[in-house]
Structures are given as C-alpha cells and as structure tokens.
Length: 478
Image (cartoon, rainbow, N blue to C red; front, top):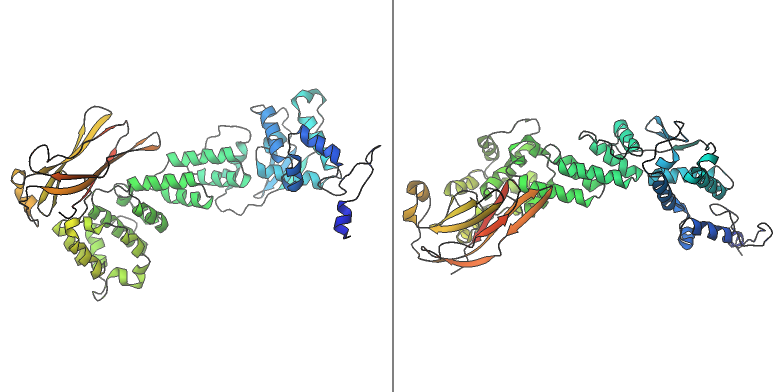
C-alpha cells in the first residue's frame, strides 16, 4: 500500500478505547469525538470531511451573530490584529466572524498555531459563550494578514467596512461607496455589500452611472447592472445626452440600452444626435464642454467624401451601435437632408431608409405627427394627481392650426381611411422601481371622423413624476 493509504487507515489509541482517528490536520480527533462535536455545532459531518477548508465557518458565524448581535464590546483590548494596507487593525472575535474572509484567516491561523486545533476551537467557543461570562479567560491574541490588490479599496473605505462589523448602520458616503463595496466584496461581508448596492442604485446620475455600472460588472452584481441599464434607458436622451458625462458611457452599456424596447427618446432624430455627440466626444478628448450641434455636424462633414464615416477604420467598431437605431423613424425632410449631409452612413443604409419610408415607425413627444400626408395629434391628459390618460387622433389636413408649417416638405394624403398598427407605452419611477404601462399592439383603421379617428386610450394610475410616454406606430401594406 502507498504511504498515503497507510496514513489514512492508521489506527491510534484514544483514551481507554481503540477508535479510528485521523493522524494529521485538520482532523486530529477520533471519528466518534468528531461526530459528536459536529453534531453539537450543527455541522454536517460528511460535508465537513469533504471540505475541511470550510470547517466551522458558517456555524461559528451563526453562533456569534445569535449570541453577540448588537452587544457592546466589554473590553477595549483587541484579541485579533489584522495586518492590511500597511496598517494594523485591532479587532474582536465576535465581530470578526461576521466576515467570511476574516473568519477563514482566523481559523487558518488557529489551526496552524496549535497541535490541537479542535481543542482550541472548543475553548474559544466556551470562552465566548454568554453563559460563561464569569469564567471567561483572556483570549489568545492572534495576528492575521490580508493582501488586497483591488485599486478601488482605499484605507478610508476599508476602515468604513471594518467599522460596520461593530456598528450596523454606518453612514456610507457617495464618494466612498465604490471603495466600501470593493472592501465588502473582499471581506465577503454580504450585508454591507447589499447596503452599498442599495445606495448606488438610489444615487444613479450622469456623473456616477459609468463607475457604478463597471463595478456591477466587476463584482457580477446583476441587480446593480440591471438598475444602471434601466436608468440609462430613461435618461440617455433627455439628461445624459445634454452633459459632458455622456463621453464616459461604456460602449457595451450603450449597446444594451440602444437594443432595449424601453429606451425613451423624444424622437428618433434626437436619439441620433445624442449618438453622434457620443462619437464626437470619444474622438475629441480635450473638449470639456458640450459642443453645439453645428460643430458636431461640421466635424463629420470634414472627412473626405469618398468614404462615409462608418466605412472607415475608425468607424467600423461603431457599426453595431448605429444598427440599433430606427433610422426609418426619421421622417422630417430637413432631418433626412442632415443624414446625407454629414456623410456618416453608408449609401445602402440611406437608400433603405428612403425605400421603407412609407412604413416608418414614429416615436415622438410633439403634439402633431405627419407621415406622408397622414396627420396625428398626440394627447396626454392629467385628470388628477395620480390619474393620466394618453391617446392619439387622426386630424384632417384642413383642420391643422398652422398649415404652412405642417405642409413644409410633406405631402398630403386624401385617403379617407388608413390601417395603422400602434402601441402606447408609459413608464414612471416610484420608490426606486419602474412602473410600466402599455397597450397591446393594436391594428386599427383610422378615419377622419369619430369614433374611427381616435385610438385606444391608455389609462394609468401612478404617483411617479415625470412620466415617459412613447407612441409607436407603423403603416402596414393596405
């Protein structure tokens, strides 16, 4: 037999019995005593034998949490010294075991520093038991070390994380929350980690969205990344697109948002302008203020006309982003002229927009929409503080309030009825969660007189302000 098998099957005398026992760490007791100890500590015996590195940690954490929760430290003298980030941090055993990382380091040091680790552990539990307060003896001072390579972890943030071992409601400042989140992740302090996530979700803004999203990806925190995506879906065009922070939005996050059906925009052309500005800021790092729209247009027009921007080497990686745009939703004559003027899109894209223009989908906030001679009035009504309704209605071209503006660059259709497929969506943020309301996709023939001229009404009840409403429709062949 090999030496390994001989060591595993070795029989030793334990007391006045002849029990099976392990001759080496981490199990130095006989099988009967181990079984009895595991039973007393509510530890699965077979699981402990298969995973000795995780021995006792969860049970000891439970023991200290149940017996010392919210209990004041009775002695200012620390029994554990943590060497980390060039500092020596003084800790106490009951609080230390709230962190799985520190618990592992402590038990590892305990087992390495004694010939009988199980006996030391039993003495530790007996000494810390609230029922044994009067018999409590001075605990052995232990030194443990932790090396941290995460650049997000600062000394202030790490100190805040350790303070949370003693005080359950430590204030987490916005400027430190990333470092505290990273510290909680390293310490495997789940409660503090979740608190940081909650703080970050409630403090999403143009200046924080990039760092918070990247932290969510780094630590695989789906709740945080999803919240960042949802927030940007609502605020990319109306808020972020108006600030220099637009430059910092990661391309992968932008791609996810552009593919989302919940993305809010005032119009497809407004979304295009936001995307062109994002590209401009990526290529002009020194600019620290939002440029005018004319400056952005002139920049793209400055490239040689023999090749559009997206066909150049510099633009190839950006194609997936612009493929997400609904260019066929750009219907105004002047806006279509801009598409060709800037020489940004391949000619085949522009030709497809022109060919499919009749089936264009519109999403807009303006009161009047005109698509190839069909005019619709979009209406939103506030009935009281929480009740709203939204609908659209076909309008005769002769009933338009400003005929000259309405006719400019647009034809007029004299058809009495037109088949339209449409959907109305509304979204509002309430207590950090998004409420969504929508109609089904409705197929309706719009006439020029009631009731056929009016769409289905979307009625909602919400306390959220503002409310983001999108009207999407398409003209099927008829």
